[in-house]
Image (cartoon, rainbow, N blue to C red; front, side):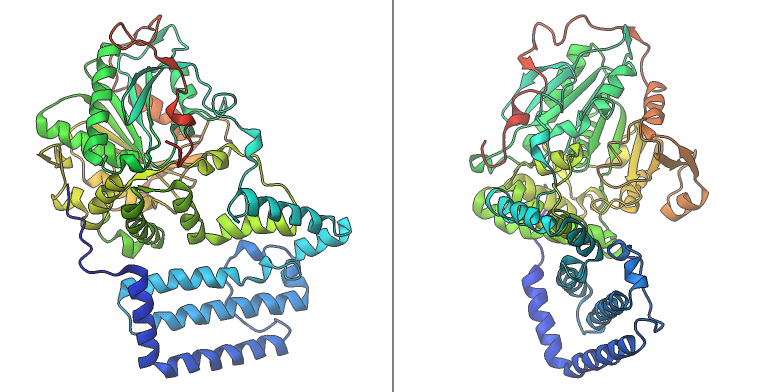
Length: 547
């Protein structure tokens, strides 16, 4: 594995200490901030918000009342001016670049918390609802608040969990668990066509989420779609680890995944398989592909990387989203050493506060100010159904990310040096235009790392919606081009926008690289790997913290 030493970097604690030291060295800058902000706000007030002030697009202020009402107009412009001045002030402090970005993260969270839209009187939509309902929304909001304090650890609920049950209306594609070890179950899905492609597909979900994002409700399930397209589909369902599993690391997961791939070849009677990984599952899959290349194992027909970043060199400086996520994972590493696992719920909270407007305050407004119930949406339910990650696996991932081990050549697995340029199968790489977790230009770097011919798809969606993009989504579109350039900006300039979902394109792309069709199997598994229980299996039903 890679060395995960952070070279003495003290993270957010050190950044805050350096920030106060910079304040002591530059006291006049803070005085200028106060004077400039006061003068600007006086100008806004005296002009009733008609002063020429630079405004940024912000959906919190989309209500027309923010422009038509003088009081709300003044409030909006004053808030935006204040936020802009504070961020400009931090940029001007004598800090290292990484400390500046850390302080902007922290300060941005505080500024977002002070948005007038988070208060009843400062939110035109909430005030209108109060007048129309005679205050009923306030009573409903208080009931929601009390319920969240008791049942959701004080965080605004993102989803109505009562509407979903895994195995009942989520993860219901027919299949069987055909193998189980201490880390994962392997599920084989039942065919829905008379003939199947000669090359099966093995799906590798991320270890920090449950697998059924691939098998949501009917007509939104990628598993269902692939089976209907004539593919033999196998998927890994990772076990939710507890504190006793702290020492399971990336090597253990790769070894388990390697064994799962062997089982797929034996059950399907196909020497080659398509492999597809998403997010951290894509990282694990890349290590397996590198191990196969080093050992001379020719098992991969194709490799698909969905919203996965393998090359982090410079990405933290070019993408605020990736920088923020790396910072959170670094903080979580300290917590995991004490507990043995990174608690899924805790990690979800921290990630939510990285995007508080979308993941905290939007639900605060909906649930408490407007008095509405949280939405019943399958993706939000899946996102809230968190899992743990072992301390060793988390440290191994951080070692790869911090040292950029898959590019620097320091990555090792199962005694083999990993060189992804020796992975010669064709590869399919997907990024999302609005992905805040794995920004698309970071995903794009993968096409320059692998040895086979690359296909890059830029989906017009975010992190999860890039995967859950069924043909029923009439707004779906994506960009592609025949010969993928090394520069993502060249791709954007020269690629062609295609209407519809990338699912259909991916299916056709894999079909061209599959062995000829054969009769669909009558039963699942075989005598060596018989069905153990119906899909979705048992591991997916484990709750975080209850291994």
